[in-house]
Image (cartoon, rainbow over all chains, first blue to last red; front, top):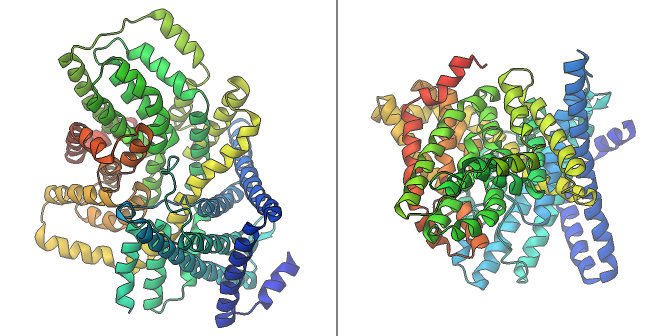
Length: 206
Length: 424
């Protein structure tokens, strides 16, 4: 943990950070598009997806098990484990951001899509490419803001729970947002090539 | 240049950009234009990890997904049919009740239209309900349960308004029941008018249905009983619900195979992620707007024109109807409510009552054009054009608005139970 913290501290700030993050998103998107063309590398993509899914499932399972344990302890043994509550609260952050990254993967973020039904295919191409590009830029900016927060936290060196530094639980924010940015950029490229323009309706959304 | 940005964002929203990116874009822009370090946006986002109440959201959502994937919709339908099917308009009333319970538990009314709509559509048509009535009923009932605990929007309202979830869970019950009664009365009238055949009540069927759903019947009592008695907090109730549903659906009913579980884990978290990322970015926007004293300026501006609470509430209803037409319920609660809250306080509207008004108002937005989500989901599920569903929803819309007016102008409906039970 200390090594990782020291490494984070050595990363640049300001413009260099900007260019670096934009570069990561761009390169990862290009790599993904390149991967797509090769059937053999699809397996790599599948394993990234599987890892994400498994991580999310494990976190949720931990949330259910730990919160249940806490209920039992509190109501039947008049005691509780102090670290469970802050851990659960931080797992909400993890579930939220990893879930959002997953939503970006399949284009299932909550949106109000009122006007694109009126568009022709050509218009839709522009609209989808434009909105995804916008989302990519905004999430990149968010990722940078979150990254600066994490760096500041490394300096503060506060403990979150169980001796874990706060920055180590915050790190999910910039990472998931970078992932999302890259995914939005990928969708934008796809849309400009006329792919995935009319997804099925959002059946499992609030 | 910078003035172009905000209209551009709004335009992008209507062309389907993810709402969180619009909110985040506006927030980043606002902070940058005031020369405030954008790291504040990240700090606000991290506040997601500071609210114990939010733990309930993934837990309840997962439980809801689990229940909707298994045989719970079928068993719920059978049970409510055995209980209420003998009434005139029995099946329509059954549909209302089943949809309400289902939405309350899944917190996602689109799932109700898909899961319950699929079961109810053929049944209603087979009992000779008119197509128009059936489609109107199924499209509008999706959001019916939002006022009943433990629906997700209630938890969000409690979070935004900083009132106790326990209070809001209790407060929604009478207003939700009023709405249910209004719609139920209409259904009975329609069935009488069209001389629809009635089903006979059978104790044997009721016993059979109850036995089939025996493991799921305790669920509402775990949630409600636990919270009302003050024995468990909402988060604990969410934990119990998730654990109970998990055990019941996988081990007892075996509707969900172990292999499906991982998919359900991740699927439900896509919805949770979608809501929480909006919440995280909206926190930054709210913080900015409060700092800029926007609610104060709104109040000062309104105060010039509106003296009475009554007129304020009328305007609030109209305004929220429009908001409901344009935005989804989660973003509307997270972005609009913080602005209205201080204003409503100045007009001495109880925050719990205000929360219920918001929910009752916004649930109407689910089936009003142009962006009513359930219109589109229904159109996909039932294979009917959106405008036809919107037309079929009109009589129901009238009743929803009637209920909304009652809920808005009779605060006792929302507050009576809280006071008489002394819920904190």
